Length: 475
Image 1: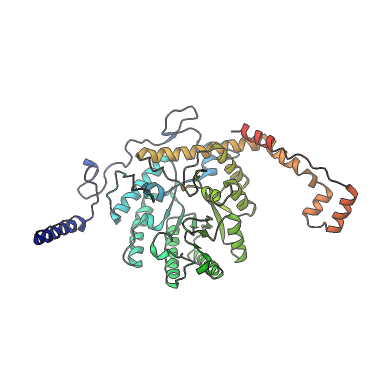
Image 2 (image 1 turned 135 degrees about the horizontal axis):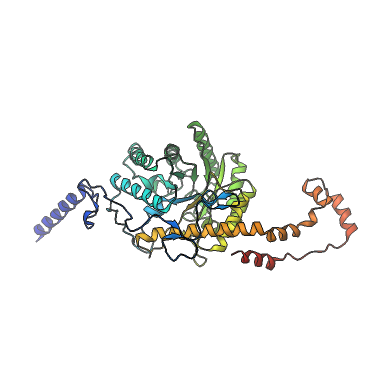
């Protein structure tokens, strides 16, 4: 009996080796979709036409109701205000897996491998998706688009091979809104990348960012993002916070220097987030990140990429962090998503709240737009949404929501009632003394004299309900 069991085990191992020795390049159940050479034949989205604007009355889910790319709003085309981008990782690498469940999404073109051939096929699917959606920008992490190799050299070679195909598929019209390095998933980064306690990890992270910046530049990318998901701590008991922050500053300083060395003219962006996966992330919110950049003399080298769901996780509204970045001249890009108010983590849902989108667009208009930044849909389908067309429906909904927000924000600006209410609220400073205060020419002795002269000040109503009424009337 023992001999039979041993023979069975050996037989099963042999079968496993044969099956896995040559990874599949096409699924077995798709009929004519795969050619003899293992390449995908025909369209990846054969049932989906190019998405067109049909107007608010349309009932067609595969059409735009509010986003009309060429329409001019406040002197600029909608496509130039919004500069939409598709996130490769959520769209083409999202599986629906989570801490409590296995993957639920099995896209027809996937073969179950993470091979170079599969990476190239995903890239082709990406560009067909962009074409049908009518979007000419995309975003990526290096490890999303190409697999790790056994060595850094092999990994870089894999990335070069896939990037060469992306360059070919892009043509003249499509380019990355931004690229970045994935410095959070691999076990080597469990203590951080730029803030790791291990010098070897710090050096490896620098090499990875160097390569990711090079390929972003090669692809014509307009920005480069730093998201420090592991740049923080779980407990201060074993953490030298000052040293880690110093190391992170030196890392970013070196990145800015390398950008100039290779002639990359894109904007370097930092994306704040308060926590998850770390207990406390160093770039907690816009204000914290600005203070970090100011302390280390890096304000001239970076701007902020504000993600709406990250802002709400830090206890703010998205509008708050956008305004914090904007009034400091540091608003560079927006990761367009939202969270669930009943869920305390980063759910990365598509933004569909028209009121929130309107407030977002008020900041964008005040900023004069986002170029060379834009709106990246750092958002994913819900785990239970498993049809290929859901990828299109989700993006259409997100794009329409922001387009509607743009229309509403323009309506508010053209009407002027809200701006007039705010101006009137601060009108007491539109005086000689107010001008002196704002110019820094009114000392305490002068102000005390005025307070004695005027007596108890009158305090006017803030008119919050009227402001909300005006805002809601535009929706």
